[in-house]
Image 1 (cartoon, rainbow, N blue to C red):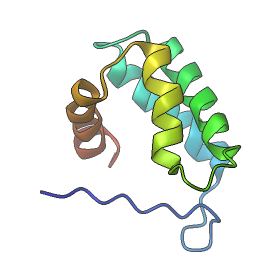
Image 2 (cartoon, rainbow, N blue to C red):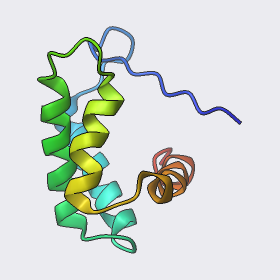
Image 3 (cartoon, one colour):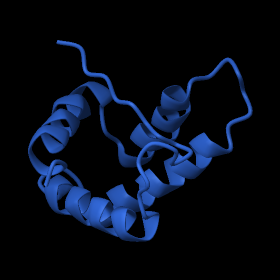
Length: 96
């Protein structure tokens, strides 16, 4: 099964208040991820890797590649081990 994630980065489709969404999103992730890694380090690393991704100026690198290069080594997580955890989060926790 293929998982497709569509992002509305310029807020043209979904008018989301980031001041409301981001704290709730990070709280949900940190509560869920605590069984696998330090939640505070996870959130800090996620935000840091997002900043790295957003400042990427290399057109030959995808946003995913840039994010993952900053995210996984900083946490010492194997991307293949993290993928099912991420899928579980988006399937069970995120919809709430």
